[in-house]
Image (cartoon, rainbow, N blue to C red; front, side, top):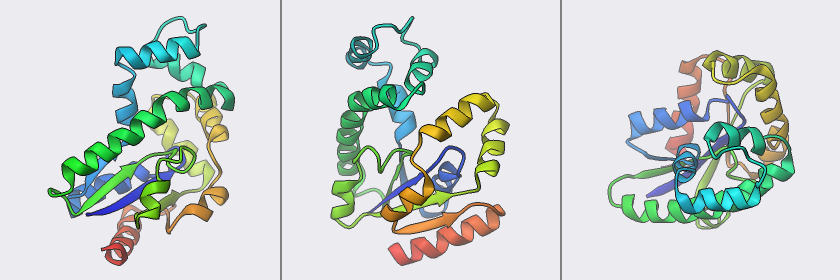
Length: 194
């Protein structure tokens, strides 16, 4: 089974890439954001978050997100709670799925920053970085309708910049054009990986 990390800034298109790989190549997709949201429902994680953020008015995902995306220090605190658990979950899931799928996708915005991908990369896994122009990403994120422009810009500001991420990537997909162009780039990369 090939392990492939997919990362990119908010609204760059990494989820579209993951979905395409799932649909066309029957890849298993580990969506780190979704898994983190599930973790936020567990009592042990909620207790750790409450201890790290005693000023939280409640432990809803909205309240946690508002606190976490205030600044890089808050983000670091929550990541120190969540990332080790996500890393363990990925290993468990790889073992569960290794005989069922040819490709295992780790879809994670913070795959580089968390250090989660390092061990996999050292074992031959490949990292795909999805990039897109900032204005286009902002427009896409606004079209989703679940975040304000200010919130999106705050999140963009806290994320590692593309020019820093490029150093870690094995492949780069530019997602500034059509879906056809995007899918064509994905196919070319997957052919090389497989």
